[in-house]
Image 1 (tube, rainbow, N blue to C red):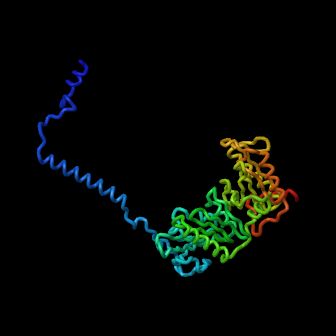
Image 2: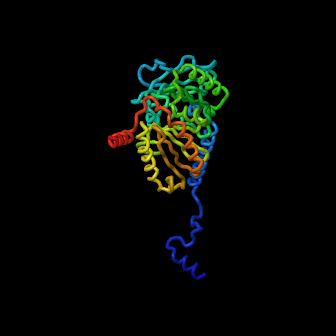
Image 3: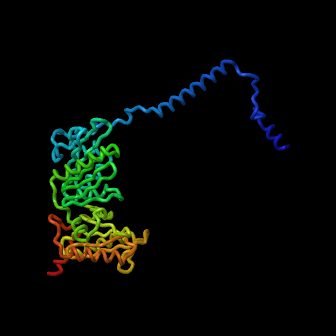
Length: 363
């Protein structure tokens, strides 16, 4: 009690913090308080009403917003005519090149340019009945079938299972169509997941599949799908910087059951392949150390290796079951050992240097 009394005595202005000393409040203060409370109640009511009745224009799809590409937008290029189903209407075709791709693909242009981007053709198809129901068509010219497949693989969701044709891959994932044919990569993105949108996407697949110029599947897909019987959905392509190695170019990989990556890349010649394989092994050593015939990753406790197979390099990384990974790698080596290099492939600089060194030693 003495302590409590001393605490009250220490207070300078207010001895009892819970007591007010005004006998009454003025009428003007009372009216002002009531007005403020009413104003706050009105604000809360307005916010609640606006939340339940949003402005419809906030959800409008401005289908013309992205249709402002380079001059000559009337040129359809490889985009087939008659893409709109009954009850739908086509917008104009716009083109975007390396100078203005950012206008359409802001923040993602670097991804497409890493796969040899040359041109983007864009068009919207809008439902006559409901202007908010639309499908945006993005057709990328990426220069080569390998680039098209690589870009497709980079954007394919893990659960999507692509269908393989003689000239490309495709799948429909909820409200979107993804397709490659030859040098082209198509994205058809619907505004909603509905039977009407899915029917329009199915029509797009048929039209682009029949009208786009095609080329045979890239050698890596043919190798893994036809040669080894693998699901095309587990195959990926990196034109450069595979596994974050600056020297690793033109690399195809397939994901094995234990999530290991089985890979293959052209070395340029049989004499250059061992040196390039060792370059991959050195790259794996940056994250680990030798453990018998393999390199153990110090962070993940997985294993990697690489070896020459004729004019190719084969290998795996991220394996937990080295026996299964080696069986897959040996099967891959048996298929590619006598397989000719893909047309137009050029050996990386490291492989060229290794080949020159080999020839000098021979002489």
